[in-house]
Image 1 (spheres, rainbow, N blue to C red):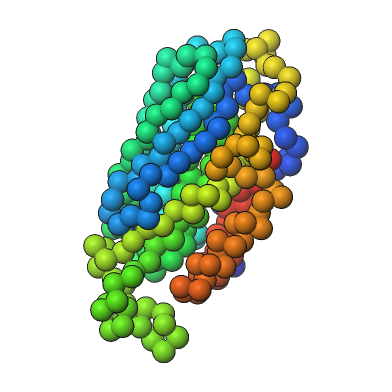
Image 2: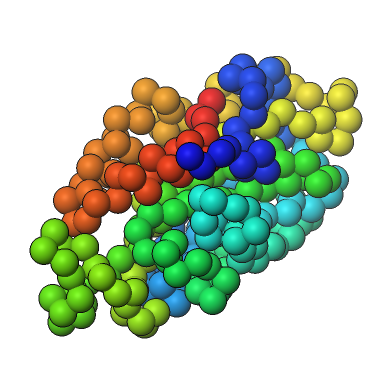
Length: 241
């Protein structure tokens, strides 16, 4: 059985952060989705920076999980620095190249995996947004020719025939409490933080997990991805707080 990978585990404590982040990610929109596996990944990220603001840049990183078996197959698709960050509302598009299929085990290219968007301040991660990613082939000629009686593919399709669908409406969000620029700058959490609220666009709370399950059930109708997702759930326990 696949063992949890420490580098990507959720925090051990389930207690929400005691302070409000000075940077609140309010929405992430996945652009041009679904797309070809080889297409760039584009995320439109919206966040608010509250007073007294921050002094340094934000580091955004996009990681593609190549296999549930080992983190050595993870790929950092791109890293971007955003700053200086002004107090108020900001939006930008994070464009990252597609994962290199040659670095992914052949048995893990198709079906369901995970993509992680993280943001760090002063090398400390304060938010992680995880998405299920389903890689599939809808080329009728190939599917008809290389499918078993149960409809499962018996051969890996050429990369140009593989499509990618990111479950954009069901992200798994984890927040981390960090000191920011100084302990004095910490602010008590109030209604300003929209992350995880019902008005926060794409983000969801634990109570909305049933919606994510609906997505997975819909995907299973096109193919049996249940076993793959169960393995991923054990390996990457992303907890919404």
